[in-house]
Length: 74
Image 1 (cartoon, rainbow, N blue to C red):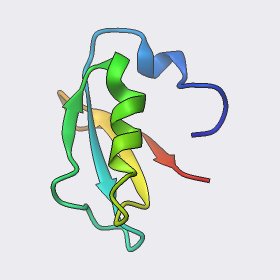
Image 2: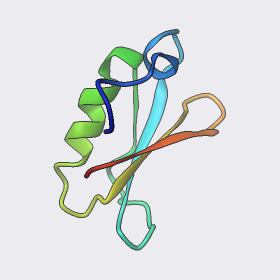
Image 3: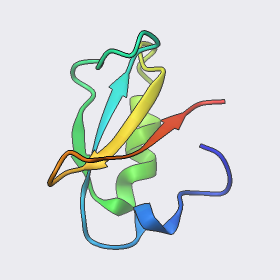
Image 4: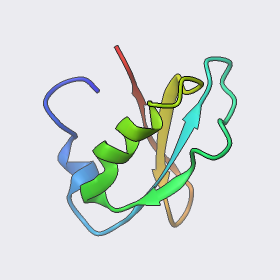
């Protein structure tokens, strides 16, 4: 994650987020999807990256499944 911490749009407010890990060939890594509260988003994404199959993590709205952003490791 680039910069210091997450942008306020992800950490402020009440909406929970859906996160999903994706492989290098752009496929969902099954078993990595979960809904997390804003305060736990950064830790949950870091835990998802512990799976060696995960190349990046999508963050989505937990209500509408709308894409919000993508986390990648350097």
